Image (cartoon, rainbow, N blue to C red; front, side, top):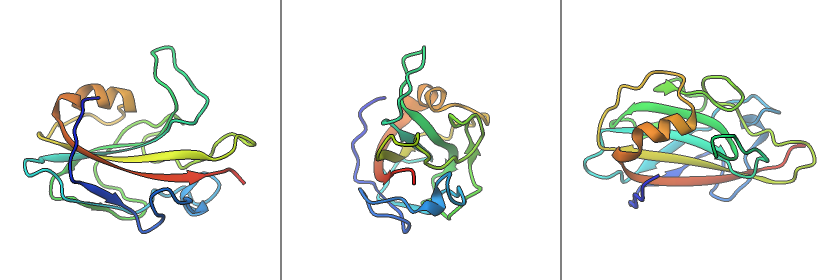
Length: 159
């Protein structure tokens, strides 16, 4: 992915950056996406994408990808700067569970603490992308248009 520094800040009411993700937002709980909010997008932002990726997952794909994609969401208009818990806006991509939409943290038993990187990506265009793109398909399509990004990292260990 291209380098896109910005002053955007991504936050959640559910957990602090570097903090524990509550069970409610995991595969062991209600499996709801947490509420997210972002501020200070670049001035020429036309749309946003959200992803959640677990780089600690012991998974490498034949195509050279790694980790586990838990959430791929895109086609969010520039006027959207927050998502409610369990949000149903935007276009859902395919997570690595094989479903469209959010799939909460659920690392392998005994695998220890995993880190979940929630990213907001600001784009300088409004791509009308079809539903069901994987994380890596989405990044391939939007990379030239990413003008800013911010992340929020949560931790979770399976109970």
